[in-house]
Length: 319
Image (cartoon, rainbow, N blue to C red; front, top):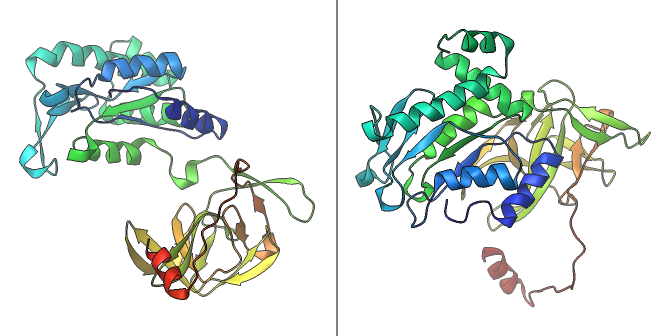
């Protein structure tokens, strides 16, 4: 909210454009000195060449930031400072912000109407669009990336987090709604596409390796197709090796939960894989595929820190 669109924001945006990833913008730290939601909106238009469409606007800024106006429901959401934003009240829109709220509501409805001919006819005919129609239009625009839903808040104080999570559920694609994932058939080396669905043979991408002091190596996998049970064997098509998945863990920050199965669209930590590295594809051997892996820049220098003793290794693992 203060720095606006930063160089790192532009880099992430280019990557999202490259891979066709639908997105939502959350303008954070609205309670900081110099926070300006509308300045960020203009920067997104100019620097990212995007079409930001606010679905809520702030009530106040800096130390007077107390909540947001929900432009879909046309209600004010005011957070309780005493509960650090855990509780909030839904109120009428403050009179001094009603005109601005109506202006931004009109922009939102116009952007939504452009997503569907029936909605456009209704809009041009002077009819009111229902909340369900507006939400449907926002999601359509978000998926085809003709509009970018824009929200604001202060995550440190939990202000705006609830509305952001609601927007993720309402507007971003479910795993079954994403475009097919590009891959390569390891036998013919022809390009193939993996449809995100619970049906079909298992296919997933290892995107992170972590050492846990209690269970050993954890391999984080994003499942793109099919399902997998703990104790199953998977085929590493990148290395042409089979490995057994001892356990499946659902991670919650620093907590973990054992699960029996993992399905398409989920992220899960696999325990027991020894040869799998970041970027490797895990799949069913009968329908093998090599998914597009992450490209890492060549290192400028090579430095490794190696523990002298096993005790030192355990200390490094904890660190």
